[in-house]
Amino acid sequence: MVNQKYLDKAETLIEALPYIQRFNRKIVVVKYGGSAMLDEELKANVIKDVVLLKLIGFKPIIVHGGGKEISKWVRMSGKEPEFYHGLRVTDKETMEVAEMVLFKVNQELVAMMAEVGVKAVGLSGKDAEMIRVKKKEMPGKDLGYVGEVKSVDTTLLEALIEDDFVPVISPIGLGDNYEPYNINADDTACAVAEALNAEKLVFLTDIEGVFVDPEDKSTLISEMDLKQAKEFIDNGVVGGGMLPKLKNCIEAIEGGVSRVHILDGRLTNCLLLEFFTEKGIGTAILKEPLFDKPLFNEEDEEGC
Image 1 (cartoon, rainbow, N blue to C red):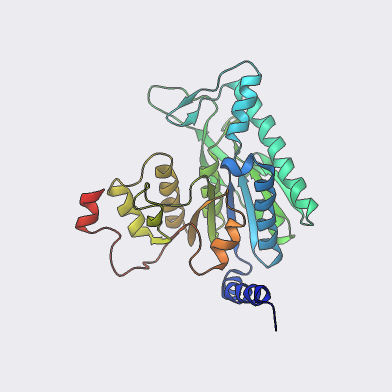
Image 2: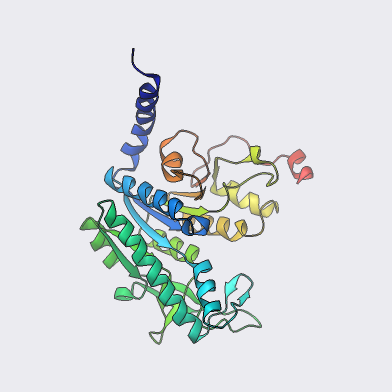
């Protein structure tokens, strides 16, 4: 008699097969940030997921953040981190700290990939002038060296992918005067995914996904299309940190990315569970409609 656990494992592999076939040789951009970057065990799990994606035929790219670590080092330098409407005010000294911290984070991720047998290359947007930016303007506040992506040159990324490397990108770009600028990591991942016409863009966050009612975990939306994502924003259901993420998802889909996923990076094997199981564990935003009825009806709107 075959042990049931082995039968369950075989069933899991069979369930994953059509997804592996469908996305083989496709580019997947993973934006890695949040608490999963601070816990060594969670960090190792995310890297293992990305490595497995690579080994079964995906073409992964990692774009990482480092905001909490940057804030820690800014305080250690004797300054207090300053934010304005969620954006880090970045003077010259803070920019130097940000570059140092992001380089450290970047090289740690590259080393972890090497440890499990995958060749990775650490980059910033300055390398080969990959990411050009303009200074981000905000009414009433000079943000300093905070950039907004103007263009992404994919030449280097395409060469690395073709040579079987995994690019690991830190969110720093070059301004008009060839000075480094700090870029929001979500915006960086979105711009890279659009430029490469990636099949998937994944945001690893500290929340499980998009909910109809954020207070009711049973209302997690597994899939929504572009129209429904816009309805979600228009209905005022989503707010806080999820609002810019959902807007990034919409922008990426409109920019040519086929699927965008919002996942809880704190969950073990979150990438594998989302990609290779029928229901997934987070929220996927797709280009094409998936439902015959809207996410909202009149009763829903009255209750929101």
